[in-house]
Amino acid sequence: MEKAYDFGLVGLGVMGRNFILNVADNGFSAFGHDLDTEKVLALKEEGAVNPNTIIDASSDAATFIKALSKPRKVMLLVPAGKIVDAVIDGLLPLLDKEDIIIDGGNSFFTDTDRREAYLAEKGIHFFGSGVSGGAKGARLGPSIMPGGNREAYQHVKPIFEAVSAKYQGEPCVAYLGPKSAGNYVKMVHNGIEYGLMQLTSEIYDLLKKGGDFNNKELHQTYSSWNTGRLQSFLVEITSEIFKQKDEITDGDLVDKILDKAKQKGTGKWTSQNAMDLGIPVPSIDIAVSMREISALKEERVHADNLYSRPAITHMNKKELEKLAEEALYFAFIITYAQGLHQLADASKEYGYNLNIAEIAKIWRAGCIIRAGLLADITEAFNEDSQLPNLLLSPSFITKVQETVGSARKLVAYAATNGIPVPGLSNSLTYFDAYTSNRLPLNLIQAQRDHFGSHTYERVDKPGIFHTDW
Ligand code: 6PG
Image (tube, rainbow, N blue to C red; front, side, top):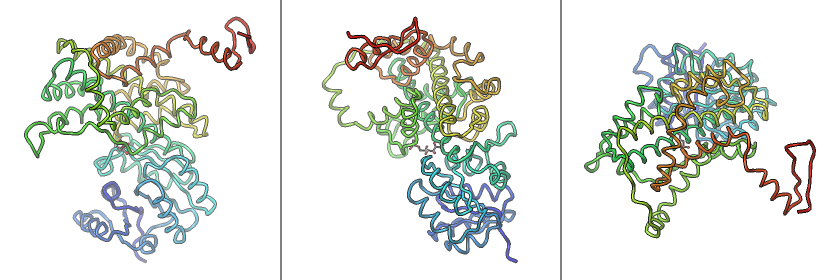
């Protein structure tokens, strides 16, 4: 009887190769599959380096499937979209009932629902599973966000828990819920990622323009912030980016990089779906829009020559750095709050039965938005699992109260000096609106009823009213 392998992986690109090596390093026998024979050979060679691992690969699908122990665990790490469906269709005739397919790509959640239902009719279990942390995460420990059939997950659990990142010894993976729960959580993870990245870029702009910080000083600032309450993967890599020298010319690489941001779309999906569900996530929305505005480079250069802007009044470096740290911490909290609110509401809408504390917990290590803050967030939702919004958590009131003033000062400073800080100002506006018991939208109700007879409610009595204005 030939050796039966514990785990199969389709797609031996950067993510796939690193993930399967991680699986093998953790004591599971692993078999890879890719139509590209060079990738197959590369994995066999790399797998042979460590005699303690059992790893093989083939470009032939039948050989691949036959090598796996049942119920088969077949993970796909292939680009999201039609390729996933093509790979599934290719494997389907070779699979048996109770086998498990896991899509580890950033697939759109309704695609996962469709695939899960299609395969369930054939007795095959399908999991959409976010995998966060990039190539390094895949190799050494990602945060993994699986969703699908709870019973079937028991066959995948030991492998995912072994390969995932660990936070204080706890695996950064958990069964999140049925159907596309995993893909949806990963999508919102990326929405928060966009928001946090936008904020770190705005603070960089403020320090540079408002405080004349050079790259060495920026490196030191973000590096010092990474030892405090802003400790996070994104702050850490930002400090490293300011230290990176350009290999082609003299100087620092960051200054040579074109300011046109691209996006594969997961942040946009977060924003679109939040709008569909009526959930306000303005800090994520504006992060997507800023990538779109940045792409209008030629127009921006032209427009810059058409309009004047105020001469920047410089701030004292130490004072600016302190304001920036507090403002960034404040806006980070607001951005997480918005994303987690979306998860809580979407969970009700789509029947995911998400546990927000559990999600914050598996984001504490391995994923792109990992941060010290997530330990506090986990605690807040452990204390109240039905918390509608992080801003209502007693443990966050002081954190926010103590730092919102700096956000106000920096937003005002930026506006006065013509420095765009849409993420920071949207976070502040969201906070001010969310914490207002009265907003001027009574006037909008009056306007709607005036021109469209759309009716309104009153503050002093129940019912629906209309006025002939
Ligand atoms: C992760 C990342 C990853 C994402 C890339 C590119 O969690 O490892 O979020 O999944 O796809 O970072 O994202 P954008 O091109 O959308 O910025």
